[in-house]
Length: 69
Image 1 (cartoon, helix red, strand yellow):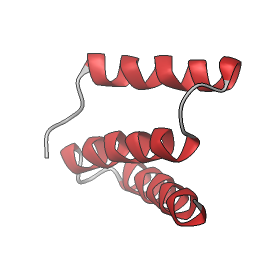
Image 2 (cartoon, helix red, strand yellow):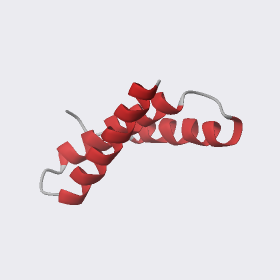
Image 3 (cartoon, helix red, strand yellow):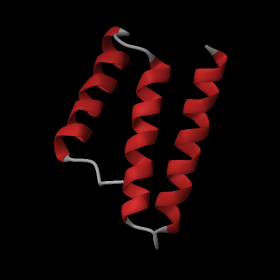
């Protein structure tokens, strides 16, 4: 699993901003992308417990949104 690139993070932030200001996109999809990026960051830094916890919380929320429809 590779660390996310600056362009991947920038694209997610732009899409999150569009969602917040215009309601564009799917909240579940955005949270899934966010969780993916955070999991990749955590995997790249295995000694960072906080990064792993944040990634796990993001994944749980993304899964919850996906299950809820």
